[in-house]
Structure formats: C-alpha cells, structure tokens
Picture 1 (cartoon, rainbow, N blue to C red):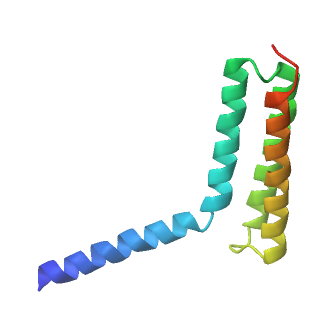
Picture 2: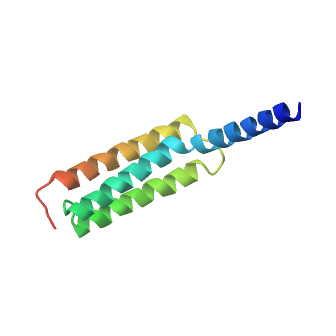
Picture 3: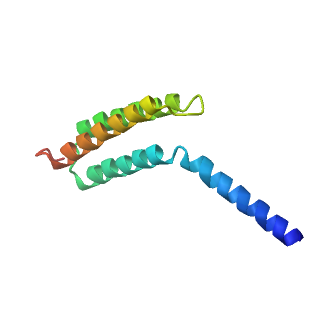
Length: 104
C-alpha cells in the first residue's frame, strides 16, 4: 500500500512540475530557438555585428514583454497575440539578416 501511495505522489509531483513549466513553454521555447538561429548566423558569418545587435535588442524587447505579460500569473488572449506577433516579426528579421547580401 505504501508503494502505491508513494508512486501516486511521485507521479503527481512530476506531472504538476511538467504542467507548471509548459505554461510559459511555447513562448520561451520559441525565444530560445530564435536566439540559436541568431548565434548560428553570427558563427557562419551570415549576420553582421550591426545586424546582431539589432536582433539581440529585438529579442530583449520580446523577453521583457513576456515577463511583464506573465507578471500577474496569467496570459490574456491579447497578450498572447501580441507575443506571437512580436516573435513572428523577429523570425522574419532573422531570416532577412541571414539571407541578405551582407557578409562579415
């Protein structure tokens, strides 16, 4: 009986932890992917130092907005839409910086 209760408690703790992490997950994961794309572009020479600073500034603005949006513990539909819009625009800017004629 003790093993069953202990197993149930462990499963509940693991599931609860996974749910709390995933609440911020899609936006945070996308920020991380975009940052990796930026760094890969710098390493390959596709992104110039000026483009790098502009893209990092944009990523910082997205992160600040995400933190403010989650400050009250929940994300409204309007805040989520704004975050998606900001990340879509940043993704486009990263693509443009990596595929333009400017090389380091």
